[in-house]
Image 1 (cartoon, rainbow, N blue to C red):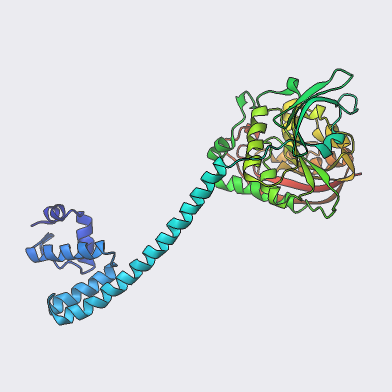
Image 2: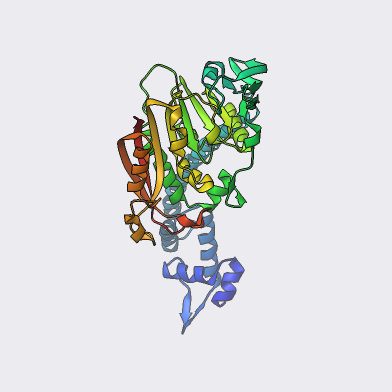
Length: 406
């Protein structure tokens, strides 16, 4: 029987047969360039397949077949030789079965925990009563009149807010909403991608670069004061920084989140209610140029690239607009993209007014009234197919700055 027919009869490939011959597992006769296989070769192959199904290595199979050919299969020599192999193999498989059973039980518990998280009763988050004194009319800076309100656990869940100047807003489901500002978030003329869509379009290397940037920023987020305070997050993807920082967020801190896309805010709020224990948040659905926050009421600001996005969106420099809300000596931690020397427009990097130049970014922060305490860089990284084409194929760095308001 030739190799093709032989392989087909036993359900293996001709290449596998040739490999077994090279390893000495099969000892078929060769006439010229052709191998011919006998019934004895078939029995050897059946033995090889049986031992492979028992997950013996090819080296062990070779040893077992060598002893069998020397002594015969039904002999005490072969049986005494083969038995320890079987015992060792069984012990290894039993150990692996125990490991897999334990692993399966652990994974099963994780599945049960996630299912329980999804069906558990959640506590509604709202506007903390203790922060109401810091909520003011963004037009004239006076306290807003609150009526038709409902409270839960010292938080405002529903209310109407108004000012004598004609400004009005509302709190619904614990979110402060300025209705004229509510709209869908776009990137150019397309809807802003969800986190799931962003993950699909970004490489693990680029995601790790963003994570490293957040880690560098968190090093500057040190709060030793026992006095409660307020942190304002400036982020185009609302809560992106928070969800990495939340395990370090001091319990006495109120964390303020801003987005004009109400659906994105609601999704973040639901996640915070279901999966996290921190209870002190202010959810603002409004624009950055009409934040309802008292001047000097915020202890720290975290700008995760929002200044760049804001400049692209409305062509205004964000720190110039919002720094009046930050307390004197308040902390300002920011990250901003700048281009490395390997970028295709490297000659412009020496222009001190170029937007993606680290030196110009530092100067803009200082001109806005900030004192730079420390800074560092993260990168390089490259992104392909970014929502904003000016980042494609650029050598990207993040300038991370720790500053204080003068």
